[in-house]
Length: 195
Image (cartoon, rainbow, N blue to C red):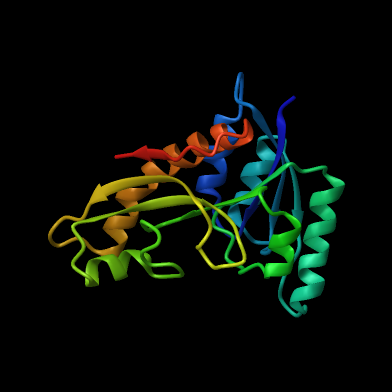
């Protein structure tokens, strides 16, 4: 039985598409729903074009509890087994996360525990780091603080800009996230390491 996956997005959906395109043939999971907090998110049209159900829960003008309650209801109606956060730019409360404990993944553009939060590429450059990367982790009530399930590394080149670093890292994100999800969907939490 394939795990039923919901993907939460806020933007163009490049990591969402990498996940969707991986979930074919013998992959142990299937995408059943894409949810966005932004009705203009470019990833919604991409999901629809792939025949995946979409739903928008606009966060603007709503209190957080109401926003999260609607997302939770949508996910439960779809009988979701796993949630993949893929560029979802809303911090979920510990209460919401607890309701999906052990069932939610996130991809973050740094080598956690370094640089939780935003502006990770600029922070890595400013710190003089020789390498940078991305991490897939289980989501807990601590921002970007859950168990690490996979990491991919790239060198930081002299003269790199945050934009150049982000562009070089993105193809690795698109390889790492599906690889981690494949293991996670079978109950395997052995970390995936890539370079």
